[in-house]
Image (cartoon, rainbow, N blue to C red; front, side):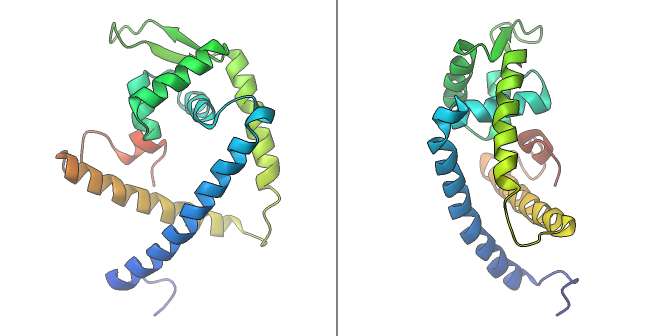
Length: 176
């Protein structure tokens, strides 16, 4: 079969299972690396995720952050509290909801996440293999489709249906 034609469902399932077998250990190893570097970074993995999301999207409520990060609201609240203690975020009145403050990143938070991102980019630039822009684009497309498929399953299980109340774009910060 041509490399340019869509795979039949059975073969697609087998090939995507291979991707999951690589992505799981990759994610866990990257997470362990970030956790080991936490003293150098000066922030936890959770705070890093919150700051990065706020930098990319602007002000959000804790429930909004939790949805976008696909994390529990309670965990995100703890990370926001940690970031607030470090003066990396501010809590502002939310005109749309009195009891749910808007979380905004401060200039100190921008500087902190920029330092962490620069360090991460330096490490990632050491990846070998002569990867091309097309290969990276294809990888992002495949992973985005896999994430969208999981969103569709979650929406079906939760009763939201295939269109759901929140789109892939809303939850993951970009369309696949």
